[in-house]
Image 1 (cartoon, helix red, strand yellow):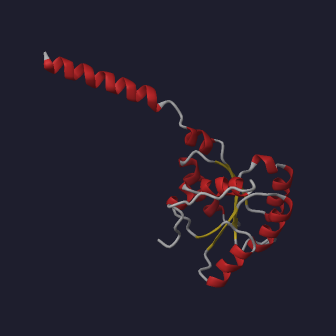
Image 2 (cartoon, helix red, strand yellow; image 1 turned 180 degrees about the vertical axis):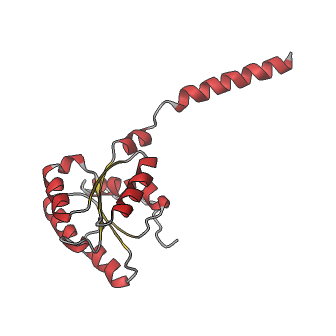
Image 3 (tube, helix red, strand yellow; image 1 turned 90 degrees about the vertical axis):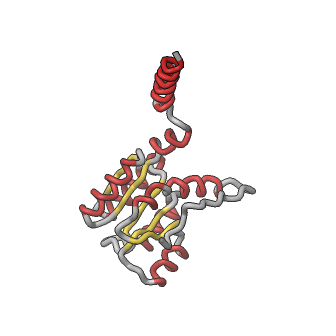
Length: 172
C-alpha cells in the first residue's frame, strides 16, 4: 500500500510540475518582451547572435547597414530596449553610434568588437557604452544583457541607485 501511495505522490508531483512550468515568471515575461537591435557587418556574427538570443527569448532585429539601423532606431525607438553595435562598423562606427543614440534616443548600448585594445574599451565606455564585449560574444554575456535595460530605467529615475549585478563580469 505504501508503494501505491508513493506512485500517487509522484503522479501528483509530476502533474504540478507540468502545470507550474507553463506559468511564466515576471522575469520570463520581461525577457520575452525584450527587443534587441544588433548591428554588425558580418552576417555570420548576426546569425550566431540571433540564435543565442532566441534561446533566452529575446526578440532580435539585425542590420548589416549602419545608416539603415540608425534610421530604424529613430523611427522605431519605442520598439527597441537595447542596442548591440560593432565597434568597427562601416559607415557609423561604434563611437559615432554611441553619440547619435545618446543624443536622439535614450537606450543602453553594448559595444562588441574583436579589438582587445584597452583604448578601444575606454573610448567606448567614455562615449556612453554600458558594456564592451569581445567577439565572439559568449552565451553567458547574452543571458544577462537585460540587466543593462533595468539599470538604464533605474538610473533615469531621480534618487534611485542602480542594482549591483553579480553576473556582469567580462574578465572570464
